[in-house]
Image (cartoon, rainbow, N blue to C red; front, side):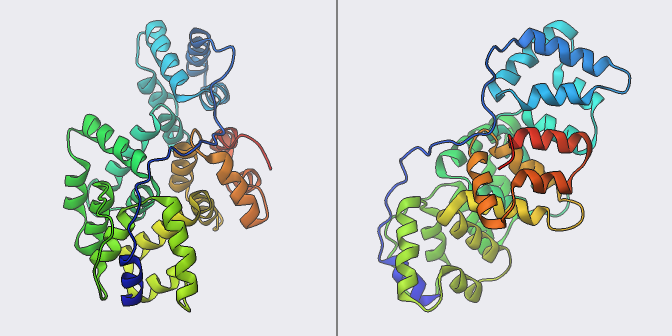
Length: 318
């Protein structure tokens, strides 16, 4: 760790100002008619036993902006709120997925963060996944939306729900600290935290490459030896996202489908939060890494209408 801190401490990190290109699987539908979509959804909800297929076909093949227009038209037509209607008509994982689609990416991330800190015990895994894998622009937007939605500061909730160095790291990330060029020596978690929190990706990728030539261990080995628990998971997530963010998500998806069933919460969260951002690229990384397509893997580990919805968002086989 001392070596790592020292090496990283010599670097002045540049700001990550460049906008990342998107690789969505869900894009705006052409020949879009929100009133027609709203009427079809109302018919589907009123059908005896609910026509989930129609609801899925419409909502998974429209962009978030289009879904908002459908919700507006639906309220005019049915005299009730679409989200309330979906809650009444759907259940389980399909309901969670559809309600997720009715939020913007930032709103969805914010509500997943809130849910991870609700009640007894904190869902650290979700906290780590979202806070450590989103870039500074995304986090700034999540913070803004979090405050609008919950009338509380994200930092305050994180601070109240976590402790120790893990809390410091998450707070540093949430506050997007840019203390460039930290000059500290010795095994000092604070150095790591400030380095990791100044996330200008292209620059950090070079750091990792150079670091490998300095040490018999690569960065991840070093982290595993020096830190444990949630802090270790956070650092590893950060490193993996610096190296290749889409590969990180591909591996998370693969892990969620390792066992007989699937960790549906994780599956839903990644597919819903990335389908309008970079799911196409995640699919490519998934196939490269796991030698089979994301589409086939989802088909094997899920079932029913929930499966159909995920496959539709996945946007095709590779």
